[in-house]
Each structure stands twice: as structure tokens, then as C-alpha cells.
Image 1 (spheres, rainbow, N blue to C red):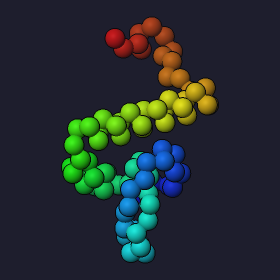
Image 2 (image 1 turned 90 degrees about the vertical axis):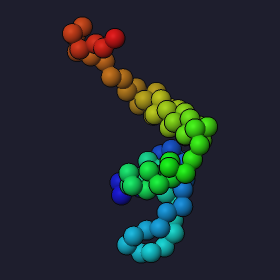
Image 3 (image 1 turned 30 degrees about the horizontal axis):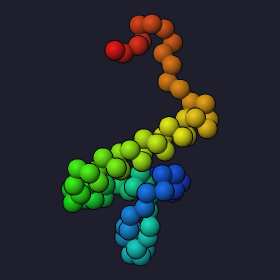
Length: 79
């Protein structure tokens, strides 16, 4: 499991494998296996909403820290 940063604020209940206790864990901090289990049970509308929330979080972080993926020259740009 990645470090707990609680960035997105999109929490799911997950059982901690080390302690056996149930915890609220942000989606991005769940293992891929746990993410797949959640996504396999959700409909398209839920997944669209999740993607939009994660996209907004990413954009907010980039704005806050002035982060941009700017190619070093024209040959690196994708169309």
C-alpha cells in the first residue's frame, strides 16, 4: 500500500492486512487489487464520477504547485 497522504478525499473501507482492522483509505492509496475489486462492482456512472474527482484533484495539485508537463522541444509534443 502506498504512503497515506489522503490527497483525493475519496475514501473506501479496507481491511488492513497487518492489523486486521477496517480503515478508511483513499482510493489512490489502495492496492491495484483492492481498486479492481471496487471498480468491478460499480456502474459506469460511478466510475465516471470517480475519474472526474481524481482529475480535479490532480489539476488542483498542479495549479497549487505550478506543475506542468512542458516538452523540452517541438519533437517531444504529441498530437
